[in-house]
Amino acid sequence: MEENKFIEIAQKAKNASKKIATLSAGLKDKALLNIAEYIKNNQDKIFEANKKDLDEAVVLVENGELTKSTYNRLKLDENKMRDMIQGIIDISGLEDPVGKVLLKRQLDDGLILTKVSCPIGVLGIIFEARPDVISQISALAIKSSNAVILKGGKESHNTNSVIMSVIQEALNKTEGFPKDVLTQVFTREDVANMLSLDKYIDLIIPRGGNSLVKFIKENTKIPVLGHADGICHIFIDKSADLNKAKRIVIDSKTQYPSACNSVETLLIHKDFEYADELLETLKNAEIKLVANPQSWHKEYSDKILAYKFVHSLEEAIEHINEYSSGHTDSIVTEDKTNAKIFMNAVDSAGVYHNVSTRFADGFRYGFGAEVGISTNKTHARGPVGLEGLTIYKYQLEGNGDIVKEYAEGIKTFNHKDL
Image (spheres, helix red, strand yellow):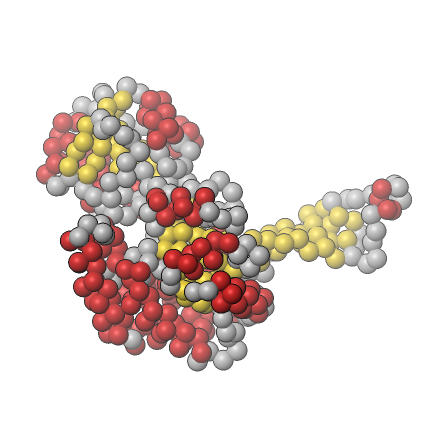
């Protein structure tokens, strides 16, 4: 798309963001329920489009142009469709995140400061091979009163186009809902245009592999929310329960190996007496074990698990803080003291005790859905749902108050939280 045309799209999105910011919660929820209904009624059309993408993707996999894990993410089956529809319905039932009073403080008599949640504005979403992302992002954007420009991967072009057309049809039938809140673009040039328009776009959210996220972070002035790697760890402490260890590691590695919250590195305390049995069980679960690999930074996205033995809890924590991508890391232990030390000392967005790393997910956290998982340390961290798509503003109400009177000591602040 030509730059001027894209600028026009971005301007329309900016204008739409001002309109949706004032919509009532009831109208937003009505729009979401309409979307869920229209997607349900058009499933066959969506599956047909997805089949076209899958047929084309098979050739790309055979030619080595597309990975098997990317192909798996591309596939939209009955379960994903069900979750997609239910996710939209769940979001409609959540509390409106906009207009919430986060702080109310009297600075002086009649001088009231209020901190209120508000939308971010215009979101730029760039994602690869995940057709269900469109419905998730669209629903979250509507509920949080943001406009959004979506750029999906070329491998899911047909699916994305049909889902967006169904969503737009539902919104057009929702009386009072503004136009241009959701926009879809398609080309590599559109990505470059999106990354350059910091005047109109307030936040970029990438959903894809390491190279995509790194490219985006290096080529835009716009704040980026996301994660580049999914290097997740599990540490088996010496007091770990064997059955828990088996269940947790197998689930974390095999339930969906290509997911970003799949475990990639297993650390085992040298004094864990059931280590051989654990490793044998993992092999029987068709997990390929790699002892002390050349690089601990590798994200396998497959049934491959690197492992090594460590001498202490402290060594495990040091290894994780050195090599983890800050996504999700878990400890398996019956020692509550060690669990507490681990959970406080590991510097990741998700730190778990005796549970699978696969729980790092907005849907499982009860957020309804997520726009992605962030390893950032500002604004939003971990699975990002509605709260991560809002910011806040300070509103101050008074009656002709001026700073000069406080600077000269005529008046003094009393700062009372209301």
